[in-house]
Length: 106
Image 1 (cartoon, rainbow, N blue to C red):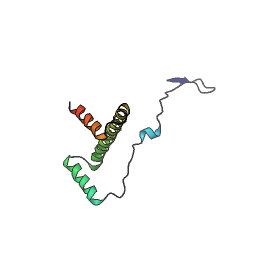
Image 2 (image 1 turned 90 degrees about the horizontal axis):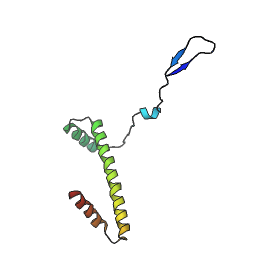
Image 3 (image 1 turned 60 degrees about the horizontal axis):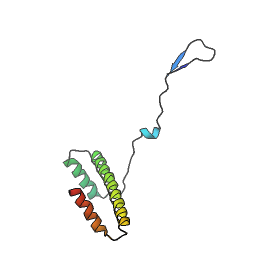
Image 4 (image 1 turned 120 degrees about the vertical axis):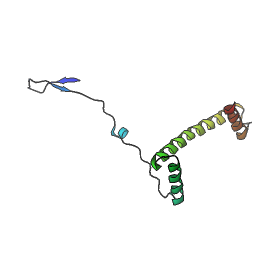
């Protein structure tokens, strides 16, 4: 709290200063997808209904899943690059991916 006194006045005024967040932080992000074929839209609606979700919530969940998969793909690509650098390119991509799968299973 900040104590402020108006110019020339005898009364004191209490002013609370709150942290200000950017307006953009408060606005939800919107993604609009155009030209979705009817059969794709219908399939998504059916999938959402089968799970008891609205289409919006279903798509949010699917996009979250897609984003997390993108992170895994980036990590795997990094492992492949590092491994190839260590063995000077003597190992195929398939062998590296098999090793990654084996590591997950074991």
